Length: 148
Image (tube, rainbow, N blue to C red; front, side):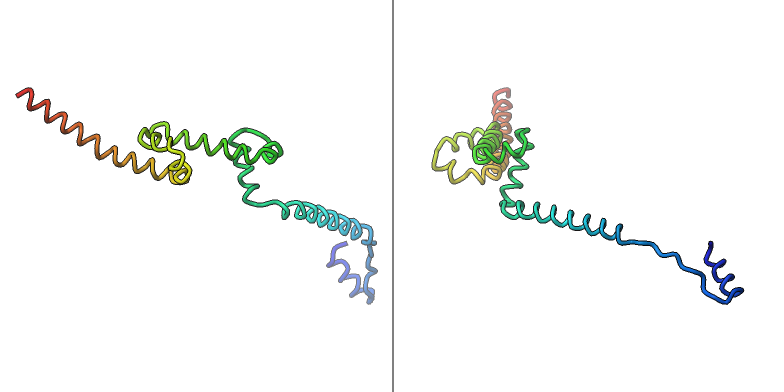
């Protein structure tokens, strides 16, 4: 019955319609159990998560992608994989920077400068960009003078 029918019956009969009541205790209990289960799961996850170093976890995810390994394997070998990753990145930077590669053969220099390698590579490229055009202009001038 619609609400308007109830109001019409009430006006005609002069009494309020009987209200149907439902037993909601079963559904309430089910919702309570679901909420408790969610809370227990969240607590268990948080208990494990807060024991871990977030920086190490981020590094493990990056290493996992880089080496295409699962995170469990990475976490077991994280120090060695991080070392290998740093070596590979430095080798990539030094591949087309001959002056910097020569400098990195010095143990003291490479120990201190490894974090600055990208900046040093950029500086080498800038200096090379200024020197090479000057050399090519000087060589061109010398050829022009020889031809004359």
